[in-house]
Image (cartoon, rainbow, N blue to C red; front, side, top):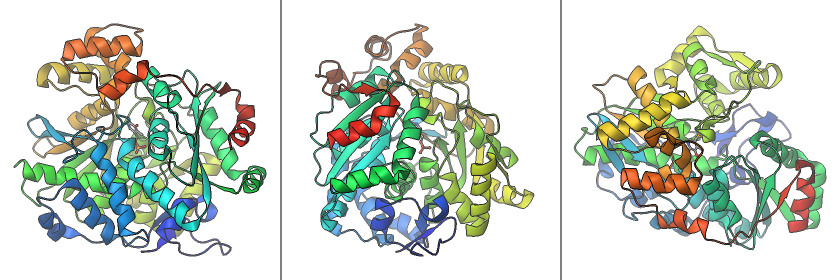
Length: 490
Ligand SMILES: *Cc1c(COP(=O)(O)O)cnc(C)c1O
């Protein structure tokens, strides 16, 4: 299968690329993205066939359907990384919370957030491509807290790849920071920046576009790539768990094969939701995909009113920081799928130049056939955390909690809902402790212990250990010094 481009083709660029090429340089013509030329049609027969498959068997067959240029042995190694999850037989448990409401837990990997679902196998695939080409890559990552730990964990000590990871010093939770600064792989460099996440992100974009930086890397025989969520090498692994979660409901006897369900997705950059959309297009019976946001609610406004409007908007900090995003990059792939290359280019350029685009009535109708949306404030989210814990005995993190609002407001309660849980309680413990007990300004370690007591949950060993591990990554600098620091590391 070849990959085509969302904004049409610059004559200087190849019209179509392979999966490997799309992974190594994910930015297509005119700043667009790569998308599969045609999605495989799996249909109900595929679901039947995998009614009793393991996660890995399902994944392998789905990846085969994409006919990507990656060796079977490499795919096996990549999928083998799900064996590191809590339950190797089922890396993604789906738990019934109450009648018709199920939570698909995507956080049982090594860094306790759903980024592991895609980044674990992605690391193995990217490193194998680099080895096959006999090239060295520097992977840049900017993180507000979950991508960084997951990227470091997956690339640690892998051949032909080095990682430089930028995070805002003071802008992440203690657990997230410790997950990064205690990572000791020889090929990893973690850099704290005086500033906020946007500073880290703009620095990364500047470096990715800088010819000087590329030249300096060339002298060190190194090429540049990024592990951000527009990379199709991540998206492809995010289709699988939607199909798996559906089949789990069939196995639990909650639905009959063929019955439609809601997918309710806490969204930021829209990678998770896009995976669900592709699964649907490939034949998964879906009623609608419900997009949940926090106070940064551009996606709610797009899906309800057809306007992507960033004029005068600024990102606000919330209790669900992994969703504090205004430019939700993967929406572009849905626009492409629904409206085609020319219109996508027009809309995306309008967003870049005027911070705004508006769909026609007809386009909005098409979008609403697939999606619905709502947003949830931090206070409402805490109320849902407390209520779901007290009524249903289920503890959720603040990102997952945003889905409880849209579940109530946007879905037909007769139809089963799958809510995606993107982080374990351990990653955002101060907010959860506050929701459960009212305690304020607690540090992560105290909050972890108080939740553990109240909810009678063990703190998992990889989180507990963080507080005793040696801090090996000590660099914290001004953003002007980033380039120099990275070159020194190489
Ligand atoms: C990354 C992340 C999200 C947002 O996922 P997208 O695929 O970017 O929409 C939501 N919750 C958590 C905890 C995350 O880490």
